[in-house]
Length: 322
Image (cartoon, rainbow, N blue to C red; front, side, top):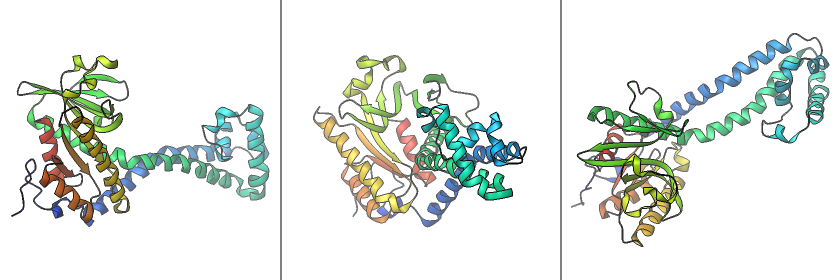
């Protein structure tokens, strides 16, 4: 008879961890919608560029429109970062090159050519944001589930705002705050807990996605006085992988598994054994088997498929009650 999983009754076999095709598809659709959303500013800028450029009759006249200079530089293929290394003369030469090599040969369609080239350069910026999108979407989903459990439990938490780097009280309306949360502080049953995201844990000298500690905000000081440097305060540490693409699933698990092993080894040297957990969006058959075996052996204390609402809620409830 298979050994039962101690901390998660929803996982009775490796198959329970596997991401279904339907959930993979839903994940890709959600990502596509988010990409379209973050593309909106670039589309609106392109529309404005076309309207402003429409005031001139010839490509060379674009140089005389001061409000177009930044747009022309972008259409020239220059990124925002590259502009820091160029003089105004360098920038003007780049714009002249754009006009002579591409806009003038386009004839009466030069404005369309300008807009197309502007969007090509902005596409690189969009691609960079999109590459970071998978992780941030997964993080947001996890945090929204955690917020839901806090709210349903009636727990009066505090949260760390990534924008201001300050700790704030639980808001009356928490709409959208999952995009800014970098930590939680709460108390339950006389136990004070902190969940800190993406910190370098001193005992292993590596970044950990999710760290749950015993302590209060007052103890979360700066420098080596912080409880982050107190190895005995760590209750649980986990890895969160939000990528939905099945092609990258095994690689994400290898990275997470290495990190989790490093955590166990590092704390074991201090004769400590905090709990470890894993939350992933893309979980394929082979990695599901590995995760399940670790859950059965106790090497891994808890796990959840990020696309499975029941499992995600269960692991968030487990974290809050640690």
